[in-house]
Image (cartoon, rainbow, N blue to C red; front, side, top):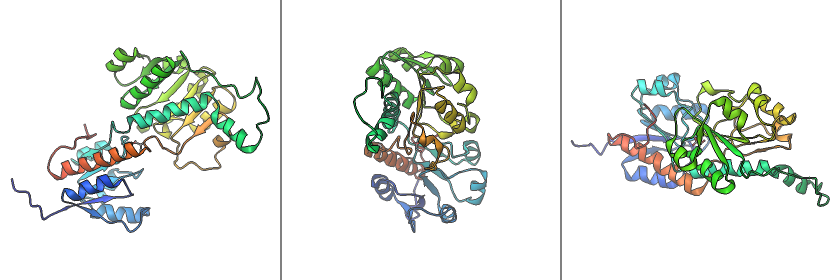
Length: 327
Ligand code: DGY
């Protein structure tokens, strides 16, 4: 087999990424389509996609039937994310378009954010920081600013894969929490190493003191956490979502928090993103919201850049992508 190395495949990267991935692509005979600016309009984005053989996607652009029909030259998609909810995988698979993602390298970073939010919410950190900043912190008060401890409490995980495992491991080590989980299948490693127990979704909702979502999102799970679900939770429940904003119904979450039906919530994801800064959720004392920073560490982002490039390089050399999400 003689590869014609003079013909370079064109890669379109729609937003800036750590240099490590760009260097790898260039070293491996790939041509990068240069962007006029780092934040292309929808039209500019689509024009560049049309010219590309391979897309390296950062962020939430949609890859559905319409897209593939508009961009028949696109032969592969490499996502700069572990989540792949923005791609119609069945449609891509039908067209023999492999879709790569970046698992593992962000599991620690993302579970760290879930763990951070859980503690922020349990100790009302946001509310207390605001008091200091606004000058309304007057004196030590034995009955004010009281949080709840997490020791020996029950952590319920929805979606116990790599990120969920890291979260469960931290919670067990730090607070001796009992782990229950609901998932598509059993996670034997978590059952053996962390004594995690598989439960129904109903039981997860009713028995947990903290619920943390680490599942892949599909539209079938839209609003999975809604009023009827919040109504069944314990009143000390801390709700953590670092997965996708679509999992919770925002109005119902607002009501559950405002009425004190649940203790609090920590979100790294909202629907839509970015969240409107005048959103009433932001006024509640028992919520902490971060701007989708789960994988935002130097280490994780470098790792993602490297894997996203490696998926492309493998494809360009007629090899299977090392991390491919098509079935
Ligand atoms: C992921 O990797 O899925 C993050 O949420 C970034 O999109």
